Length: 292
Ligand SMILES: C[S@@+](CC[C@H](N)C(=O)[O-])C[C@H]1O[C@@H](n2cnc3c(N)ncnc32)[C@H](O)[C@@H]1O
Image (cartoon, rainbow, N blue to C red; front, side, top):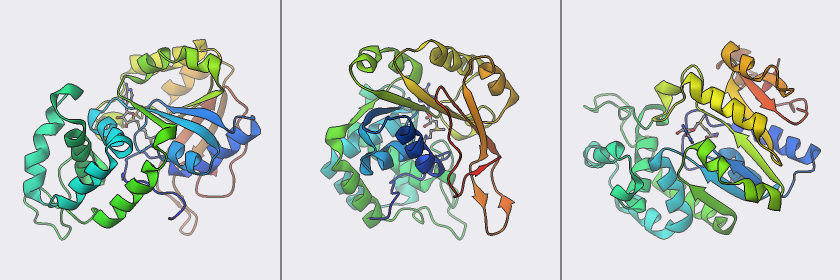
């Protein structure tokens, strides 16, 4: 298996931060902690840290029921999910058949397997992995790229089976991030916990995710981390003045960086991002993320 594997092609996935967060945990004696991702998405950070044995357990919370149901299926319905992947044609007809799952807002309105497979299907057949987008190749499939060009069944199944081996160390919840965190206070007292908050982007969240944040939601997160006790935390954000203003008087540490940087071409392909934490933030290791 390659070092960082994930079955989703998730917009805003923080693969680039894995080593950095691993170092942050080690420098603060948090290795072996319970690692919480309240905005799970692809959960690429937590899943990799679990495989490296840098953390003891992983708690995932995601508000999008298609993504929640996908992760729930990976860890609880592994064989059924893999069979569904194997037996479903990756075609525009299937895209239309599954389309109604994108309208479902209550997790009890369909089975976890149906919702979870639909989540994977739209993630891997839509433009840029965006669940609310149109399919690769367009509705009329007239482009040179077909709907199945990012759907390598064999590879996806092998990644899912590999990750499912960690099922005893992973919990998956469907909830609003802050509402969920407020249910976890007892856990913070019982074990060493670290929360990695990666909320929807301030600037472009509404274009990418089915659930995104208003200004008030960003304020609510900043209030939560001000008030929470017995929890170390890190937040990653797009570097917007409004966000900086929310944390400027909290005593939190800041570290701006470029999330995606092509060293070969010296072209920065994505915008500036920001890390905020109650812990001292170490320098970046040499790699794709470039410290400013
Ligand atoms: C920036 S992405 C997280 C990406 C993730 N860290 C990764 O590496 O793939 C933000 C995620 O938060 C989810 N989300 C949006 N609003 C939420 C809420 N109120 N509570 C929990 N999750 C939410 C979105 O569906 C999206 O998956």
